[in-house]
Length: 224
Length: 224
DNA sequence: TTCATGCTTCGATGGTAGCCGAAGCATTGT
DNA sequence: ACAATGCTTCGGCTACCATCGAAGCATGAA
Image (cartoon, rainbow over all chains, first blue to last red; front, top):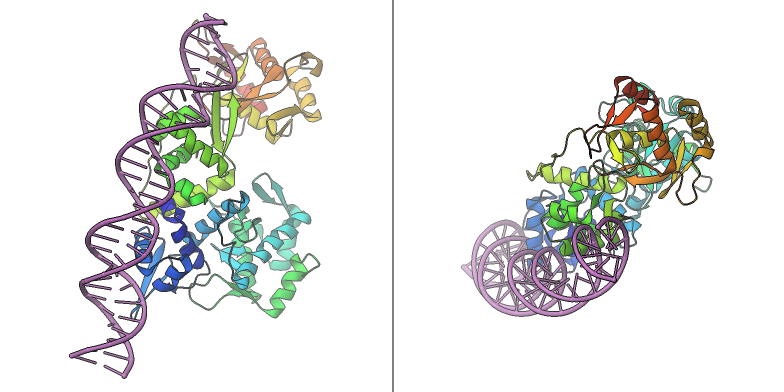
C-alpha cells in the first residue's frame, strides 16, 4: 500500500525534500534523510515501484522526482492532516520561501497567497462556507465576472464541484480548489499576473510585479 | 506521522470500512480487519491519537467514525494513487433488505428514512446540532406545529431530552431520538402514514403509499 | 446482587523491515 | 589502461511493532 511507503520516516523526508518539484540525486536524498546511500537505494527502489517517484539517469547520477502533481497533492494532504494534530515531523512545510508563498496544488493556487485569497473571498461574502462545502454567492458571481471575466457557466463540470476547500500544506488552513480555483489560477496565468516556474516539474508560482499589485488589490488584506 | 498510521494493513482495512461516512463499533472494525478485538483496540487508540478517527460511546459499544471530510479526502487520494499501480481494494456491500429502510429504535424512527429525516431537519436549520447535542430552532418549532401539530410543551420530560442524536444501526449515522423523535413517530402512526409490522417482534415499520408521499414532501431530499 | 457482553490493558512472542559494512557494477575522467 | 565517483546488491544484525492469551473494567440485563 502507498501509505506504508510514505509512512517510513526516512522515505517521508526524501519525499518532503522533493515537494518543490525539483529532482534530486540518490545521494542528495540519502543525506536529506540522514541515512547511508545503500539504505537510501533500497528506499528509492520501493518508492519507484510504488509509483511515487520517477528516476532519470544522467551520467553516473540518478535523479529522482515526484511522479506528478497528484502525488504532490496527496503528500500535501497528508502533511495537512499531520499539522492539525501537532504530531508533525521535524520538517515544517516547505523550506523554500517561494514555494511557501505561492505554488500549484493540482491545478489551483496554494500557499500563503492561496489561503489569503480564500480568506478574502469569505470575509467579503463572495463565497459562503457551510461545513466542508463552499458555494459561490450572487455577489461572488458578479465579482468574478467584473474582475476576472469568469462566468458561472465556465465552471460547471459533471463530477467536479465548483468550489472545494483544500487543506494547505504549509499554511495549515484551507485554500480554494474545485473548478473555480482552477479557473482563477488559469486566469492569473492568462493575464500574465503569475506563471509556474520555468524549472521543469517545479510547483513554484512566480507573480509578476503588476500581477502582485493586481492580486493584492483584489484579495489583499491591507498588510500586503 | 499520519501516513504510518494508514500504512499498516489492519488499520487501512478499518479506515476503508469507514470510508462511507458511517460509524462502526470496535469489534466490527476488528472483524473487518481480520484481527482480534484486543489488537484492534490498540490500533484504534493510535488512529484516534493521530486525529483520524473520533469515538462515540453508546452503551457498551464504542463507535468510531472518520474525523471529517479532510481525512476522507486524503484517504481517497491515497486510494487513487494505489489504484494507478494496480493495487485496488474491494468494496464490501452485503446487508439486509427492508429492515434497513425503516424500523423502530426503542420508540422512534430508525433506518434509511430516519437518517434522512434528521438530515433534512439539519440542512433546513429546523434543528441545530452542537457536537453531540441537538436543539430545536424557532423555525423548527413552527415547522412541527404547522405540519405535524406538535407543540413544544408536549415534548418536555423530567429526565429525557427533547432531541438526541442516536446512532443508526444499519446506516451508522445519526437519526433523531428523544421525546421529539418519539412524538414524531407516534404522529406518523396516528396519521396512518406508517405502522409497525404485524409480525410479532418485528421492528420493521411499513409506510403507506400516502404516508410515503407525505414523508417525502416533508423530509425528502429530491431523489426519494 | 450476579451474569453476559464489549472493550481495554498487560505481558510475551515473533516476524518484518530498516539499517549499515563490504563488495560489485556502471559511468566518467585522466 | 587505471582510478574515482555514484549507485546497487548482499548478508547479518537489531529494533520495532503487530499480534494474541489472559486478565481487568465498564456497561447493561436478569
